[in-house]
Amino acid sequence: MTDKKSIAPDFIQTDPWPIPRHVLIIAEIGINHNGDLNIAKQLIDMAKLAGCDAVKFQKRTINIVYTKELLESPRESPWGSTQRAQKEGLEFGKNQYDELDSYCRQVGVDWFASAWDVPSQHFLGQYNLKYNKIASAMLTHRELLQVVAEEKRLTFISVGMSTYEEIDEVVNLFRKYDCPFILMHTVSEYPADESTLNLRMINELRQRYNCQVGYSGHEASVSPSVVAAILGASVIERHITLDRSMYGSDQAASLEKPGLESLVGQIRKIPIILGSGVKSISVSEEKNAAKLRYWRSAS
Image (cartoon, rainbow, N blue to C red; front, side, top):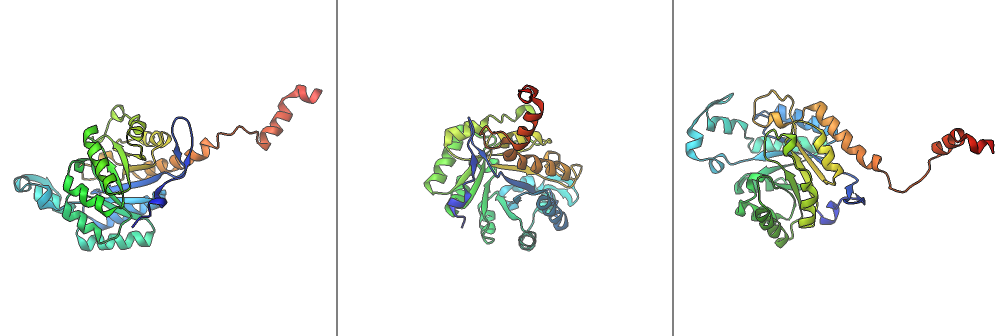
């Protein structure tokens, strides 16, 4: 179980908001692996080499999350001509998750997953993961929320397509069970246009709920996530892909290798660039002052 004291980041105190010295960066693999373990491992390697702290997947019980009518309806995909074939083709089972768990330990990166139903959450429980995740779509799934809150693991709660009243209920539930959480501002569009991102919500959520706030981005660009970190987001989550042209509904809202590397590099520079906020004169400045302030030398 995660020690609550260990999850509090070290903040740089600025006006008007604190900036984390180390932003937790999550590479959302989701279902961008297309049911292929080799692709999943390549994405894990990509995230690790870029400097991400964790990778995330998605877990569903197909017959619970989708209706029989939808599953039987037509849909052309690499796995067949029905919705069921497509959904099952994208879903990893126990053997695959056992291998992913082993591979992440070998590589040295944390992994976790967002469960879309209660049996999937119980399934994930066997891996003793550091984190839980509530996807925006699951924010009103009361039974699932309670199961997650009872585990008392640090939980990232995405609040896309949700009202304040709905968020209030979730926050109250997690506080009732004394479960640590971080709200994740997000816009549930795939991909999201930059004009819709409304990053000022990071500070609004922090003030309203007196908690840490992160950002889960679905835009195609890098800069909004960097801005979110400057605004004090303690967690940044971004979808990643080997190639945006690959099959899948999330690929277009994902970062490829160069974008992910740029994202991590820029975010890691933020505390260095911000500095201490204490006015000082460096040794190099003293030398330049002696050289450039000619009137002082003349006197």
